Image (cartoon, rainbow, N blue to C red; front, side, top):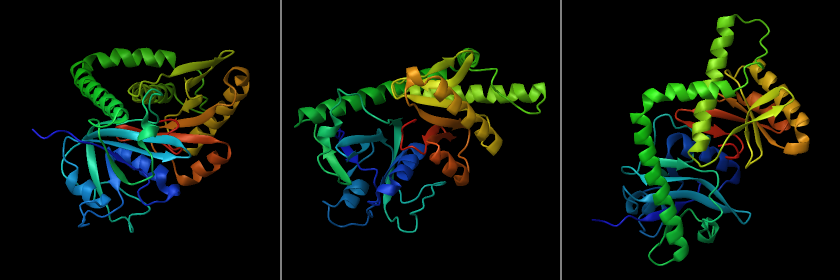
Length: 315
């Protein structure tokens, strides 16, 4: 049996730092690693050739890069199938220039950062598109590779367990709804049924997001301020989050006011938190533009994943 190999792929596909966030979003949404160099390269030492033809199904790819002497991690997963040059639903602003290939990963673990005891930075000596890890030769590489295999094995087991226990999820979601704020949906004119549906939609969105964060060994809590409660707070990263059931402007405006209010009321304890609005879909770019001037990011659900426009700060 062929021995599994381990690889690091840089998320900076087109060597353009301004596009890193876009490629991060694509990797998480489509559970794939992307390579900017074409698969038609002939030299077996070239990145495009190795990515498409040397990496094999069953290998593990870590998507990460070294930036300002710190590791930026997107995620890692097991290579599933042969390389592809296109993917249904995938769109990129660089598509006209992108002539590379991609490898789909399953299972896939999205990750904004690695635990401090995992020495990923030591494996990122240079910013290069592709490099192989050698756990049989390097103690550092062995720690990283063992960690990825351990997490991926746990991910696979968790997926099976969730599928087997699916009937019990309703009760868990009911508990999460009870923790969410039920008094801050300040609708101007809404029927009781519309209010109930909106609250349920937000609770479901929050539960899905909580599970996404939990899969990364991170935890969400509720931040309370004298009778008011923000939907979610991640203490480890200082993230303050307000969820809304719609990406319409009136919902986003409401969330902005709530976040600024919560941030002000809790400044003694929380300091200067990172603020974001959790939405069911990606909002229009015109809306995110003015939010960025207020230092408020956006998180949205994309298929089975959650993405943000803050380079993974919230996802």
